[in-house]
Image 1 (tube, rainbow, N blue to C red):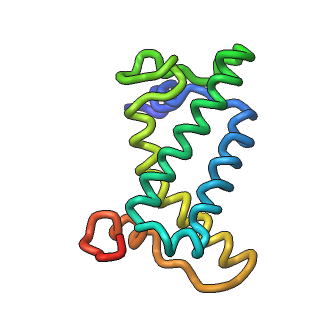
Image 2 (cartoon, one colour):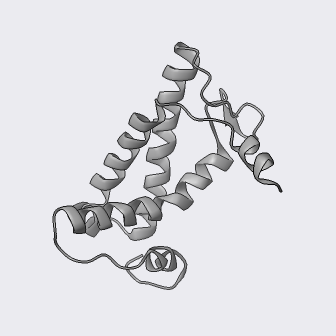
Image 3 (tube, rainbow, N blue to C red):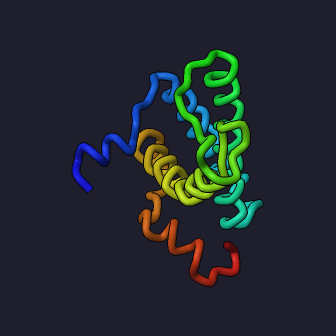
Length: 135
């Protein structure tokens, strides 16, 4: 794959993705708070994070793509899509990216607010698959 074909595959983005991504980050960060995190098993937090991102993608897609006709993304050619705004492959990708979002939230909180130093990103993913009674 050449560099040009990679960028052709990526398409383009919109400035509207900054607030959409910001809302996703804020909600994942709230879910990642230690009070809520202590009440939910880690694997459930990761799954819930993917559901949250997918729900935000659906709502923002209906507003930005369907109602305002901005055409920012279109999943209509993907399997198991709903109105071309969400699809199962993208939702699974959001679940897979949730530990990264949680780690970024913890790193930002550590450097901006203080507190405990976060674990490595590798540990966030390892805890999904390794036997852990709290996961």
